[in-house]
Length: 190
Ligand SMILES: [Fe+2]
Ligand SMILES: [Fe+2]
Image 1: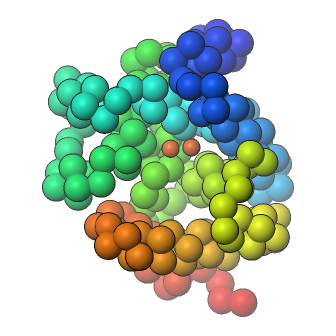
Image 2: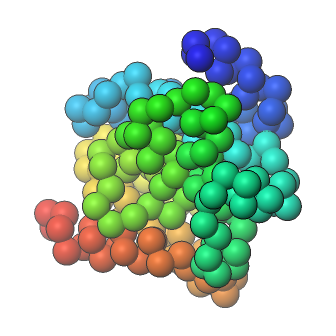
């Protein structure tokens, strides 16, 4: 599917605010790809489609996950906002004709990450938070770091997210813990 068609389809599926966010993530992901030597076109597409499953209600997402063979374990069912990453993989493939596994995985892991993330996956994860329309406590800290060090920025993202989830007494998806440990063990310390 051509990029303009993808945009048109997404615009029809997502609320306007979400669509604007999606364009912001695509733009930021492409910018980061150029800094960190990832494929800029793949980054743009992954950014564009990262929230493609968000046009559906949680109930619809759960039934579509079953239909498309997305495994919903207790960790996912306990934090439904995370499901759209895993389901997004299938929707991007089936409804938007994306076959590139790097793009699909960047969509799949944008909500909870995983250990051993690719540069493209890291970029989309971070761009989701640092794109220009985002406004939350701590976003400036991430923006200051993002052009300098990708892994360091991911550590900062997780620090913030653990505090927020902890305050709400939400469950933490194990992938986030695996990502955290992997970054601390394997990334170069400052
Ligand atoms: Fe998302
Ligand atoms: Fe997003």
